Length: 232
Ligand SMILES: [Zn+2]
Image (cartoon, rainbow, N blue to C red; front, top):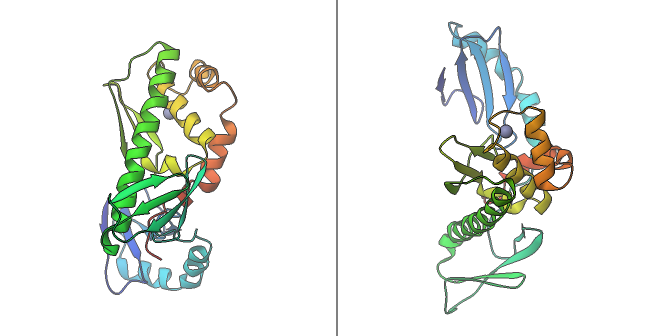
């Protein structure tokens, strides 16, 4: 697969060659708004682009339905682990960033607010996800080598055979039941490296409920989590 971006293309369009593609296909990534034009490996680019140009209205329509960006700026309200927290810029505060109940007080230069709020969210996410992971692991009677957070696009969690479990830090912005169901899923993979019936039974046992609503929430709203911290 190869990918090119060119100034001739409609705004934000990426062309991807795919060996198994038959004909052209357009899609808009709900997590980024990027339009992707998939073409067969040896297809000529010009007619493919002409076809995509003709779909500009469709691309615009898909983009209009995307979640709104939720920039990390003064006054923005963030759903942090089921609690609304408002970003409040403060002049001359003693510490650069401190949470005070439902307020997140951020001092220092304005241009660094977004970066520092994200760093704080990552730290909160790691602490909470690590605690929940270890609690479920103890219940399942398995070990977890390490818990880490990242910002993967298409997955909320992953479990490696080495015993390392990774999550998207953005789960801290999802409802708690969604986060916990994701943790139960990854911890259950420490026992079953598949999605068989025994695996699903263990997830339900750890989570103490049916994780289906959490999965449905992620399908319906997961992409919106990627719009937090984007400049408007
Ligand atoms: Zn899985």
